[in-house]
Length: 190
Image (cartoon, rainbow, N blue to C red):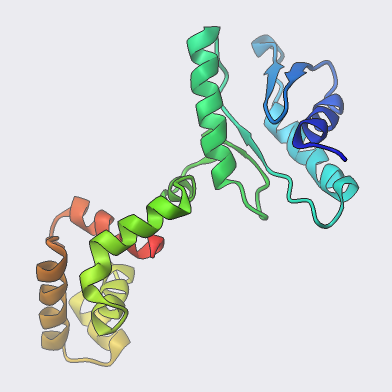
């Protein structure tokens, strides 16, 4: 039975002139910075082949950390690779930490159990009803009272009232960017 280390060794074996060491589920790849190689891109091209060889039940993913020098750099790169791995998905099974460039991708690296607690902690008092829906639509419409009212088929005063309730129940002030981001992230977590 093949292990994730076997799949990793197989994938790295397809890279020309690559020096690497593979463990059970971790590999260290040496790249000559002067060569200008893109190991992540090259691995991405062979990854579908590896998944095909592994069979339909296999769900192979790869996280890639930043280039590193020295022991501390390797430790940081490994941590980054683990994070990138949690953000890898079916659409992007090979993800480098440098490719995490949206809040959604960053949050995908947070364990689901942690996201669930965060979402519940921030939004729990809203329940799953109209206040939560109003908040989602309000944020999706860039905090426009008029567009939110139009989208929800409500009077603008009703939107003001509901958002005021959201602010009271969550302890967040939607005129502040950091509080908007907290609520947006919590919605994506729940």
